[in-house]
Image (tube, rainbow, N blue to C red; front, top):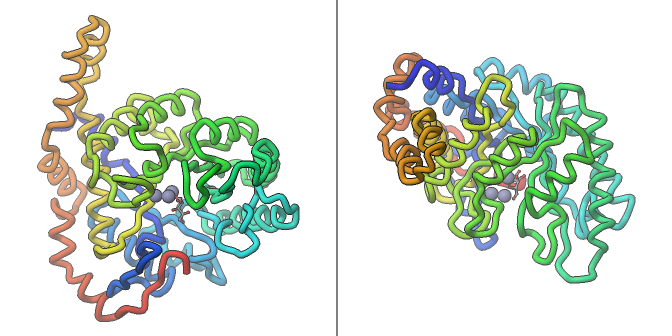
Length: 386
Ligand code: AOS
Ligand code: ZN
Ligand code: ZN
Ligand code: ZN
C-alpha cells in the first residue's frame, strides 16, 4: 500500500509530453514514415489528450515554434482546453535557419543575434497567449575548431540575450536553460553542461533555471548528483526525460536504465521537488523513430510514474537512521528494496480510484484509437523539424 502522502503525490503528478514526439522522426540516414502521425498541431493535441485520458497524469503538451505555429494561439489553447489539455513549455527554435550557421544568440554577427532574440521574445508572447509558464531554451550554438570564435565573448552574448528575454517575461513565467555536451557542434557547445547553465542563470535572473535533459551528458555522469545540487540551489527548473545508451538517443524514458530514473526521482523527492509549488517540470523529450508514438508515450509516462512510486516507497526514516549510524549497507538496502518493489499492482489500483483503466496500454489497444488515426491520417503526418 502507498502511504496517504505517497498516493497524494502520485495523484498530483504531472508529466508533460512534447508535441514533436508525436511526429515522424529518424536519424540523418532515414526517416521511416509511420501511419497515423498527426498532420496538424491540433491532431498532436488529440494524441496528447488520448495519453492523458488513459494515464491521468499527462495533462499538458509542450509546443515547438515554428513547428507548431498556428495563426491564433489563443484559439489553439481553447482547442486544447476542450480536450482536457493545457499548453505547456514553449520551445523556441534558434537552430534551423540558414543565418544560424555560426550560432544564434552567440553568433558574432549582431544582426543574427537580434533575429534570435526577437524569436525568443516572440515565443514569450506566444506563451502568454497559450497560458504557458515555461520558456524552454536550448541553444545549438557552438564551434567546431579551436580558435573559431572567442569562448568568453560568446558567454557574454548569451547573458546579454537571455537577460533581455528574461526581463521581458511576465512574472509567473520561467526561462529554463538546457545544456548539451555535444551535437550539433563538436569542439565547444556554448552551454555544454549544468555548471555553465547554472552560471548563466545566476547572471540572467531569478526566474532562470537549469533544464536537465537526461540524454545530454558524458557517459557515466551521475545525473542524480546534479539534480540534488541544483535543487539545493533553487535552480532546478525541470527535465527533458528520455533514455540513452550512447549519446542523445531520445529513446523512451526508463527503457535503458530504469534504476537511474529511480535514483533521479529519489533525489527530486528528497529535495522537495514534487511538493506543491516545487516547480520541477517533468517533461519528456523523445523521438519515436520506429514505434507508434501514442502507445510509446503512454509507456513512457508510466515508466516515470513507476520510478516515482518506487522512490516514494523509500523508507526515509529508516534511511536517515542507517545514515546516522554509518551503516552504509543498510542505507543502500533501504534504497534498493524500494527499487525492487513491483509497484504495478499498486499503480493499477490507484488508477482505478482515479476512474481509469488499471492498465493504460491494454486500454489503448482496446480503444481502437490507433486503427482510427491510421485510417484517417494515413502516412502524410508531420515530421520532427517541419
Ligand atoms: C536537443 O538536443 C534538445 O534536447 C532539445 O530540447 C529538443 O530536442 C529540441 O528542442 C526539440 O524541439
Ligand atoms: Zn531536450
Ligand atoms: Zn536532445
Ligand atoms: Zn535528447
